[in-house]
Amino acid sequence: MHSQTTELQCPSCSNKDKFTKSGILNERQRYKCGLCGYHFTVLKAGKQIDQYYVIKALQLYMEGVSYREIERLLGVSHVSVINWVRKYGIKAPQQNEYHPTYKILNHAELAAFMAKPENTKGFGMIITEIGDKYMLIKWERFRH
Ligand SMILES: [Zn+2]
Image 1 (cartoon, rainbow, N blue to C red):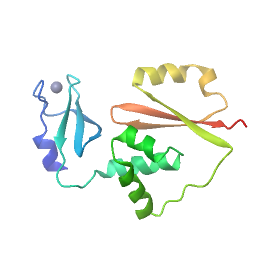
Image 2 (cartoon, rainbow, N blue to C red):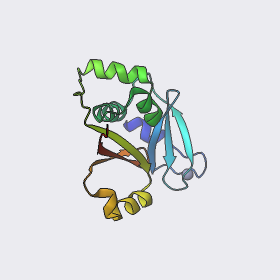
Image 3 (cartoon, protein in one colour):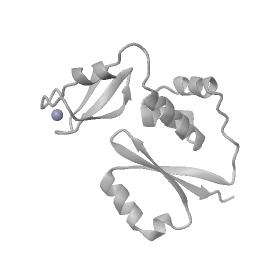
Image 4 (spheres, protein in one colour):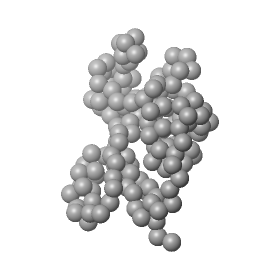
């Protein structure tokens, strides 16, 4: 981690300080420059995937998000996610009364969403960070 930070430099504006991680693409870590907003990727050292994505993937899995959806959201292969679920012995409890829906929002969109009482009344919700955006997972009662 410490060596990675010093090597990072935005190819667009040469900023060396402020970056946010925004997913993994083909084994490459994707970053967003905090100054100019430019996206770029850096080859990951080894095959070791950042623990950040392991935790995020397991978190989403526990929320009922499918392997394929996790792959699409985080940019890590669904095979990796299946392996982590096995490795950590995680069993998602079966539930059929509720099902999760989710939205990916930037900060302004999230603030606008939360400002409307009808969007929050009577729902369970989790907000988690996904790269430079927010993921809002909403639990709704399943209607048969
Ligand atoms: Zn930049």
